[in-house]
Length: 136
Image (cartoon, rainbow, N blue to C red; front, side):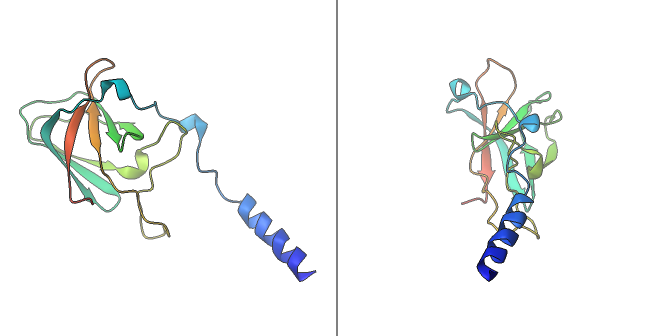
């Protein structure tokens, strides 16, 4: 009887968990055909649940899409020459609507590392690689 009660309680708690994805919040699929081996001296530095994008170029980018790890994306505000932009990693979603695990005090799992960062400025131009600093 105790085992049955424990299994029932476990199934109730498991049923109360949020689903990992939300199709209504799904982002676009990664545009692999636009991936090229080009980059600009724009640094990405992680600060816990955020990244700072430091545009040390003389070029601005109007409302680009930020891609992280060829999976998660978010449209960010324009980033001008010389500007630093802070982005909350929880705002990134994948094609299934899953949020990037940005970590934080209440998270038990390891946060997803930022390995690859790219900007997409249009539907047909190659992605612009960014320099990720400080992630393994």
